[in-house]
Image (cartoon, rainbow, N blue to C red):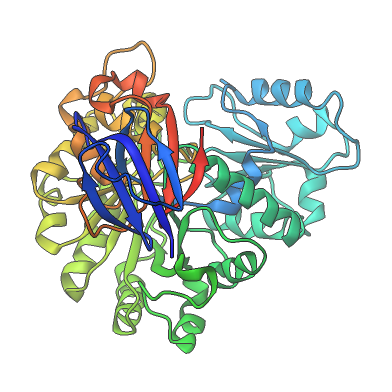
Length: 484
């Protein structure tokens, strides 16, 4: 029998000091300090820290995040030329035969255009693959294109071309990738994370079954079903929310993922109005005639649709599809909404799965490409006020797998010295914490003991200080996964 006593913790924001007993993975008692003095298999002293529900990252690409942590970072590049300079600077000691992989560039404001010949001139004959921060663009050198048996006029692949080319690139062997994933989840646990929703474009059920045969994960994992695996998932008899046999109860079947459009930085988010510098309104990945039947088939077999929609027209299409089908579901991102669509999330009972850390990163790109519409971009307060349920994710590696980054952005609407961007869309800390913990609003007897102890009370910190929140302990199903 598991038995854990948490001594001297403050339960909740601005909470009173208490001892908290955990038995069999659940909160068994919340008592006056010293009252729980009986035997416990393990005692942790919270030193007056704040006890809160564990955090859940509602949107992660876990293998890509694990690999991203080992790639050459290009997030500071202000042009294609500067991205190449950063690459060269980091390659001084790299083996000459390896595939060169960089990640994190944002070209929405670049004054120049990336091109395969820029990489060829800088690194003649080298296979180079550079990923954009939003994962919707892949910039390849001629040698990298040859490596995957492709030709392309510019080497800059977008959307589906990007994703299929990514799958064709050499990757780490499964045992190596699995070690990287374990390291990444251990780092996530050190930030208070007790659960993730894995949106990796792969057979996540099979992958996580393999991983947990070797080592138990340090977070719960919801295994998202990608579009090509719908029929296989139905044949397996899996339904969203099912607990999988592997993983000791930590693995569940997640929702079914579909794409309606692209992304803002690639200017492929599908909008009602065209982008200012082109006649394009973005890219419609799945028109309603294809989207609705896929959602219907999934819902009829117990799989909850999770629909990627970033542009306002893409969100209208997704909402219309849910309205037609009348099924439960989620819209992933919801970055730009028509005013009349805000209230539809709550009316249809849909989850708005949002990534607040993207808002500070994208504010300049949004001001340029969504000019005149940013009052309804990343509209978290409007969604919250309408009664919608928000869940916060990172979309790692688009942003770090660290919910405190998203919480700080949701509350503060900035991550630098500039004033908050559309501060009217900021949400209260209590709402942000609930959205970042799977909807939990506090801790009560009987709750699953997925918990964290913070060294400081979040309610007494500024948004900037929240981003660097010190986490003293993380507890998953009653067992510590991180101790500072």
